Image (cartoon, helix red, strand yellow):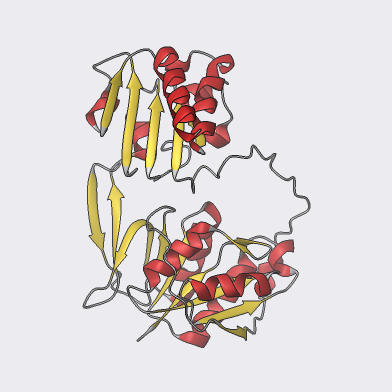
Length: 320
């Protein structure tokens, strides 16, 4: 069976969930070969093997941390030359999409971004995407070169499938242009204790109906009771009620959780573009004619200031 390269997204060896999802999808079209760059390979390798990686190609060099994405593209290109894979899968983060695009240009291949599913086809992997604000679903395959595909988080449930996970060192040569942009400082993002928005299984978002930053604690309380991430509509962000980093929508982040709860969000097309691929959508809005109700699985017509606290209390009671 052909091998499939999977780029590993990790923090010092702690493998992030989207990578485990990629390994699950990769097994549908070939044998996963994980590419781990930077420190922590000893920690990551057993996890990658547990989820199906037949091999783990590792490389560690200061260039991966000291410069922007180009050194990582050099390494992934080296892995591509070493393996000659049937496909290359990369998490669909901002960095992941840049790495994938640069790699596709270098190896003369087509690229598909933001796939939400992957299956084997007679002429190569077939990727499912949501298009035009998720109003349409498309199936595509790459017709030139080795398919390079980025996959959105929460597109598949990680499944354990123990494999050999043989660790091999990857030899990487860095090009002159790869060190052209140096990282001069880093500022850790303040932790909220909540899941990362794009990776969370549950997201609770607030919109214009929250009516002020001082009221967002209602949304946060429900999210905390569910172990969810907190999102916000563009209207709420533009009003200064919540940070831009939490914006869900076309100009914010795209999410695809198992459960998406929209509180006080009308459902403008800009917002729908960022959450319409969620598996189950629940809306709470006092306007029965709000566009959000056109796409929900469950809708509650009511005042969020009454409904959300009751829902939070019920969730807390059942968990207790």
